[in-house]
Length: 202
Image (cartoon, rainbow, N blue to C red; front, side, top):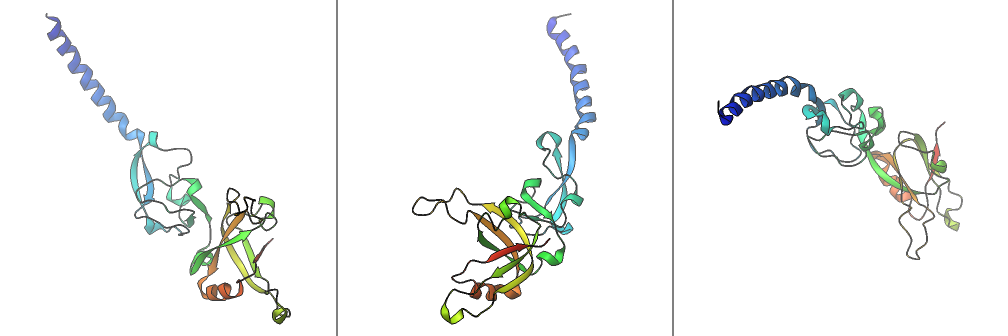
């Protein structure tokens, strides 16, 4: 038998075997993973309707990929996340009660190392935000305004940002909190010219 015909006879069963093997094993290498059905903004609390299952090759998934919707729902995004892409742990904050984050806006508060408790303040903590009175003689007898039971969404290090004099800022952190919408104007008015303080609930 000519070598060319022999090669054909060998190639046919080998190809069939490879196709059968891939057909049997391909489903085992693909996994249904919940992904956003739309682009989600930062600090959006994820609901079941925000997710849909989509198949991915297990080779494209990492140990940080969240593969079950139960691990995602009621957590919130730390950054904008694209639709139809798997979610990873580092892109989401902790699970929180809906009433902690609904009807709120994300506000960034410049913070000193002491305000972030030496690095121990973290996303998910509940704090009081305290706005002291402005240091003027006409307002010296005013009391501080307290915004109680505020959710910390994130604590960001800004140490790479330096002041115009090339010195490290005395507030090298930003604490992002979920401030109730109803108190936004009050916070904006009271915090002009003063530095809000943060006290963590124990």
